[in-house]
Image (cartoon, helix red, strand yellow):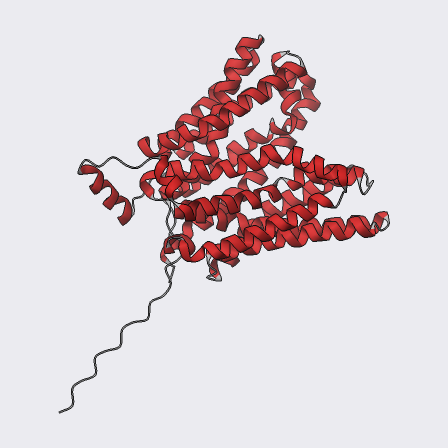
Amino acid sequence: MKAVGEVRVTGERSLLLGIGISAVGIGMYVPFSLVFFHHVTGLSFTLVGLVMTVTGVAGLVFMPLAGTAVDRFGAKKVNLVLYGIRALGFALYPFAGSLPAFAAVALVTALADRSFSVVQQSLIGEVAHGAARDRLQASTRALQNAGMGAGALLVSGVLALWGTGGFAYTAWGNSLAFALAGLLVSRVRSVRSVGSVREAAAGSTGRAPAGYRMVLRDRPFLGLTAANFLTALGYSALSVLFPLYLSTWLTAPDSLTGAAFTVNTVLCAGVGVLIAGRVRRSGARRTRSAALGALLFAAAFVGQIVLGTLRPGQTATLVALLVIVVVYTLGELVHSPSGGALSVSAAPEAVRGRYLATYQLSYSLATALAPSLFTALLAVDGRLPWAVLTVTALGAALALLRLERHLPAEAVYAEPPAVAAPRPPVPAAA
């Protein structure tokens, strides 16, 4: 018999197909961001970089407002609006040849891009309950990796055929991908739990839903956000620290960076859903499976320290790095679905958008801090940043375990723990 949490979400295939298609669009420009916008607009790299930095920071500031919009209008509606904004923005990029025009289009698009993760996480909470959330988290991550890889290959083919002029076609293709994704997501049906009905009934009595003050008073959730910040630093390691560590400390060929990314992407896309399913069916508490993912991160980081100390020959270094990347990716695959579902389920439905906006700031802050932190530590000793990441990963695992008893049971367990049936009364003696 199928578990309650495994019931399929109405419109689930459309939701996942839309996520995959939008990921293809993202993969068509993210790996080439500066070059992409330089050729699409004709502006210099310096101006493009400046506009991207300023609009990126503005996008972070906008995230709390996106959380408020989700709570007021619903995640599905806001999700569709953001898809529409992104589609319109990329359709206009080829015509934004002046600095003011590019800045205006980039600002609006950046606000939608930075807020999208908050809204998508809220949408998963809005359309699914129980173990279905974990399953959607895993499927979403796998499709995002596969889609971004496909998008990068697609734009490479476009550029091979049309040269740099193909970037304009890429922008319009990206716009089409976001528009199609929005149409598909519009078919998803939101669900309401008993808790949301009760909250709605409370709202009908005239009590306004609590805002960010409620989030700031929720110490267990703030602890969960802080633990995620520690783990999120590890997520930044592969893209920021790994290439620098290879070239400066190990003096290994830069081609190994591409190999590492390929291994990571293939594993995430190929076995991510399978591993998450095994974890989910094991009945592990979300806090413990997320902590296991953090411990796997720590093991990979210790492996980098050992490798950086021994510095074996090129062949041994290649084998060791690939093993380390596999362990690191397993940590990502175990942590991501459980951590995502944990945050969604720990947030009260009436203010889920605000809660998840706060939670997603932990990723954004880690992404912003990682480059300066890693380069400063690397300048002292190539093993030092890995040592710091080992400590943060272990700290995250410990924090998750300590928070377990303070978080709501529906957040900790994908399925409610079985309750023993009461014993029948003993008949009175005659």
